[in-house]
Length: 109
Image 1 (tube, rainbow, N blue to C red):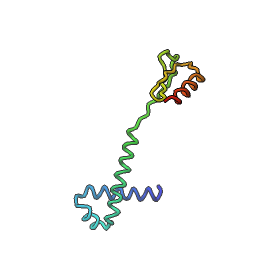
Image 2: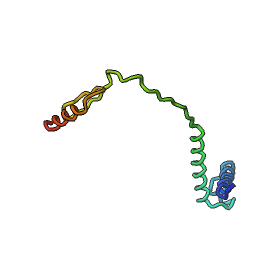
Image 3: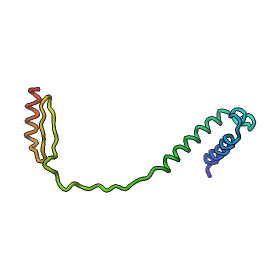
Image 4: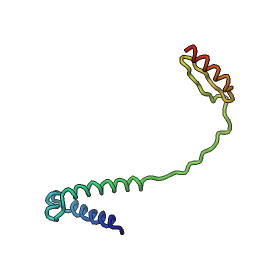
């Protein structure tokens, strides 16, 4: 166990002892020769560590399988708006015709 883990474990025991003891934090810290600010810090820190552990343990991953659509349907379209005009594009549209239409509309809008 690393020194960091040992220190956290010591504080887990202290915080647990305090919570089960009953007296206010200031009285408990004074009686147990523990710095009040350290107790506040570790109480907050351990509460956050516990919350993160709870969230992590409740997450589950579900495998997903993506499938390709059989084919594009005739109703698949894209609408491009240029100013007040709109152009509806169907699969297989002519890109050159679209460029020319957008250019013409851009000049007039």
